[in-house]
Length: 436
Image (cartoon, rainbow, N blue to C red; front, side, top):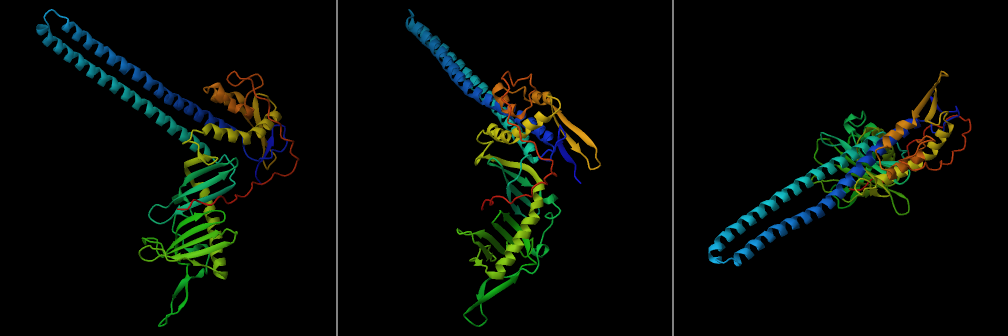
């Protein structure tokens, strides 16, 4: 029997996971990521300001040396012996122009060096911000509404990618460490997943006759070389041997515009050219769909093999590329805030967020996090950034965010009925993977 989570007042906690660890992980990530974003944005603004200043300085240098040339030329022209003074004036002008060239070159080098230094600092901060966000999202902090994945299993280094859809129009994509998965670290035949997949793959000419006859193929001994899975669609590639350079068959399962599932199988010739796909009917379609269903179940374990964040999107836009990390965190706060307010309301101390864990043997343990520890993480942020965290109930009653009065408390969640804990929901298959 799994441990049960309780509120600080010993009432059942409906979420049944360590919510305090989730709050701590979020504040740790969001505070650091926003600090890096503000610093990077500040450096980018400084580049623009410095560009204007550098342009002004270069113009000032040009005017200064041009003025010297004008003065020398004028004094030479007004001299009582211009023929005698002229050669020396010309040599002096040449020296001035040489100094001007040196000054401009030196100034341009300083400008370039500074720009490279600032640009490198911006790049480093953006990279660290990506790492901070990746570490947070790899901890699986968000519920998964649906998933899709794509695997490349042929070759010496199998690899894959997963796309996860979360509440609030958040979508994340991760590289998968396929080689560490017990099921997929080795080649797998169709027969390892389901047996008796004998289907029609097209037509062939009858012997000594011009008519066509059905061509059947037993797929059990073929290896799975590539997979793209979505909730109601799939593409599976098969090879007779994994060291063969080309696929033998490509299977597709997808709904048509009326929602009817269409199953097709295409043979690849020796030049890797796909022949006209054959549409499977009746029992053949059922066998293929059963194979794909088992394949989808077997691939679900790969979701635990996420190793690197590829991208994160909010409302269809990459949050790192479009500078919408703050909006992403705001969307996450909207999900966490009601529960945070309720945990705070039920905690014995106004300076802590508390939960309890009840063990199967009847022992209870208190979990808590001091609010001041969380507030310390966001202290380096400017006041307008600290406002994001007000709804998480991490400010004690006598404290404020950056001098801004604490926000009105989020409406409390109605007390949960003392019913058995709800088990975690099973993962729901996700959005259709992107077609190649």
